[in-house]
Image (cartoon, rainbow, N blue to C red; front, side, top):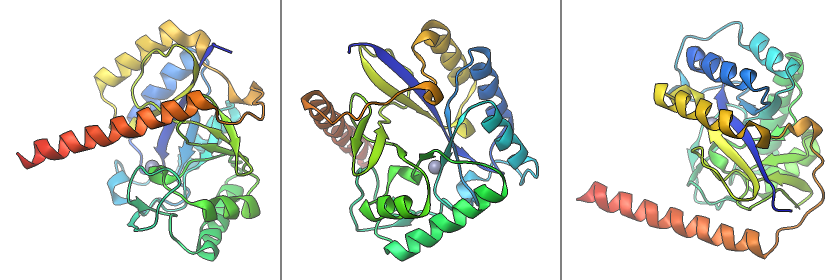
Length: 252
Ligand SMILES: [Zn+2]
C-alpha cells in the first residue's frame, strides 16, 4: 500500500519537435528500460512548438517508440489553444483546445486526430489533453470516438477510477523522491537543457526500480480517498500562492 511508483510523461512530440533533445531523453530512458507515456500531437499548428523544420521521418520515429512499448498518448488534435471562460475539469489554465468547445466539434477533432493515428499505424492508449484542460464533453467524446480508457491527468496520490475512465495523476514537473503513491513526472523534452538531462539521469539511476511499465501494470478500480483529497487541496492552494507571488514580483 505504501510503495512508491513513478511514471514519466513526455509532452509535445510532433514533426517540428527539437529532435536532438528527444534523442537525448530517449537514450537515457533506453539505458534503464523505462517505458514512458509519449504524448503525440497528430497535426501540430501551435507555432510555439516549431523547434525544427517538419521532419518527414517523424511518424517512423513514433512507430519505433510504439514498437519499444512506449505508451502512446493522444495529445489533442492541433494543439491550437484558445482562451476560454468555461471551466476545465482541472483548473490549470484558461486556455484550451477542448474546454467549452461544443461536443460535436470535440468529436470531430477526435475523429480527425484518430484518423491520422490510424493512417500512421499508431494506437493511442492514453488521453493527454493539451495544457491539461478539457471538460466532461471531452470525456463523452473520447468514450464515443476512441478506445482510450486512461486519462493521464488528475491531482491525487494514486491512480483512480472516475467518470468511466482510469485516471493516472500527473503531479510533478521536476524529479523528486516521494514517500509513497504513484507519481507522474511531466517532462517537456523540447525545452530541456544540459542540466535537466543530467538531473534526469541522476534521478533515474538512483530510482530506476520504482518506475513502472504501464503495459504490465494492473490498475484496480480504486476511488479517491481522504489522502487524495488532502493532497489535492494542498496542491491547488500551493499553486495559487505561487501564482500570486509571481504576479506580485512581476508587478514590482
Ligand atoms: Zn502540449
